[in-house]
Length: 210
Image (tube, rainbow, N blue to C red; front, top):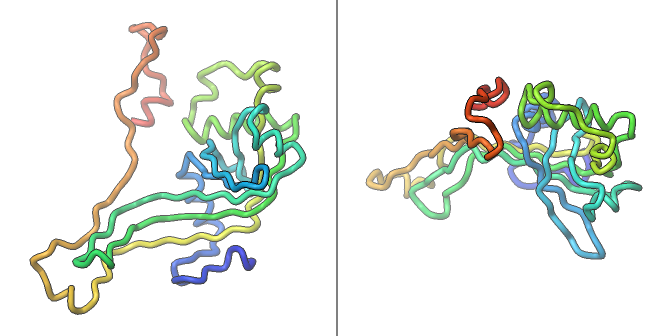
């Protein structure tokens, strides 16, 4: 734990269990990455995937952050799952159930010899089984793609679960509904591209998402 990762508010919600962090990251598909560009703070959403003890971030070699990342760039990465809306009997006591992680570190390019492996990890993270259903990247496509890695060494994890924490006065007013509205992401019916033949069946990777 560092000064940057120490929880100052409700530290009992924190966890330093690597398995909790790994599960949180493995269930996410988007990371919000903060860095400083030309003296100004910037936050960008990026496709992500975990490969062991490193977080992989996908982007184009022409993107501003990835140009800066060629020699390493200091970043802060946030990953959040919103699991529910917590509705109390007072506006003040409303809350959310969530699982969140914040990482700090230097993002550096994955070595060229590991890039195809990294892209496979990212693809399989987003849609398990998809890599083997499609063609592999060409040398030109590999050259146009950059994957940054951030070590999972400096991070904080915070989790809230449970119902509303009404104060005693509001808890006596049972005419106002209080409780939790669970939230989760679900896949809708797949929409084929115009060039997909009507006779082409859904691949196994897509069916598994439904």
